[in-house]
Length: 309
Image (cartoon, rainbow, N blue to C red):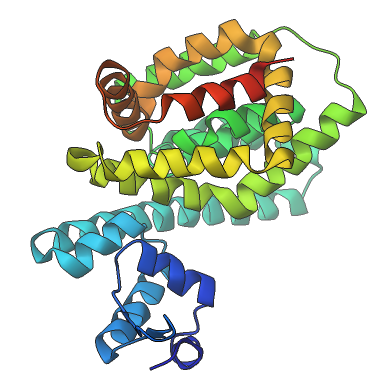
């Protein structure tokens, strides 16, 4: 079966199908004479399954476990059900509060229901903490301007886990205090426009791919000497071949320069708040201490381009 027919059956884009092939979730046969892909019925069946599971907000790594590892499938699905249940409960409570809020508002002004608003302000966070993405939403709420967006660009991908332990709650509170203590810096219109554009790109295009790529590397951590380093080297090559992207990263580093010391302190809290960040730090140590196949010359070129004059 050719890819155009697969697109019609699955509702997926060609790019999505190629991505799932690159992730080894499907293995279509390549014709030796023209290199066209020939998709089997099993490939199509898996793509339909993948598409359905992604619509349920299940990560690529969890989908891999569900499809390829029956022993992990039940655990992955139960974890997703638990997350959905928590979200439903939180939304139900929010709805009840809003309905009550509307009823109170019918008989008074916004000022007359101060106590109700105070109650909402104090109680909503307590049960929302255990939802995935709570810290991301709070980061945007607590720091609603350009600074908040800049911090989201820098660390937002690692704030997707729930605050489900006292250690995490304490670390989150300390992180908020640290961010709130950052010096006020007068922003130019150019700075605001740049951050808004980069923030929009991160939210709309790159965040899920970033998570999936990191999950894939962490999944293959036992063999990352070969596979993960090839991905990293390839990423550096692509960046070095893209002057616009290099310039964008260079500009981001320049805007982050005043927060250099603060960003180092942030790294104290992220390993507690993000299991993925902690794993990445551990892997980075191994990479730095061993010959893992990382192209140091490419890394040096990238560093010079981004941090150089």
